[in-house]
Image (tube, rainbow, N blue to C red; front, side, top):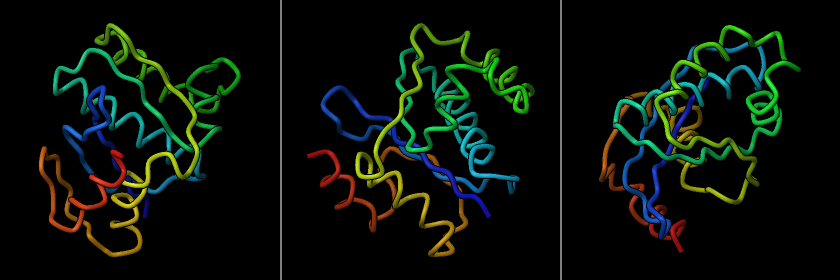
Length: 138
C-alpha cells in the first residue's frame, strides 16, 4: 500500500490545504513517489493554483521529473505531467530532506502505519494533525 499526501503552504509556511490518498501499489519507490506527485499536481491544478514548488524527499523522483529523457521507464507518467504542468505559470520540483516537512510525512504515514485509509482534501483537517501543522510551520 502506498500513501500520499501534500500540503499547500502560503509564503509564511502556514498550511492552506492538505490532502491524503491511497495510491496504487508501485513496483518501486520512485514509481510510487511519481504517482503521488502526479496526484498532487493534478489536485493543485483542480484548485486553480497557478504557482507551485513541489518538494519531495525522494531524490530519484525529483531527478526523473527534472530530467525525464534520462528516465524512459516513466515516459507515460511524464506525458501526463506535461499536460498538467502546462496549466501552471510556475512549477518547480525540488528535493527536500526527510526533516523538512514532518507534517506531510505524518499524513502519509497515517495511511500506511495507522490504517487511516479515508482520503480527504481540506483546509482544516483532522484534530490529530493541528498541532503537527502548527509546529511544522514554525
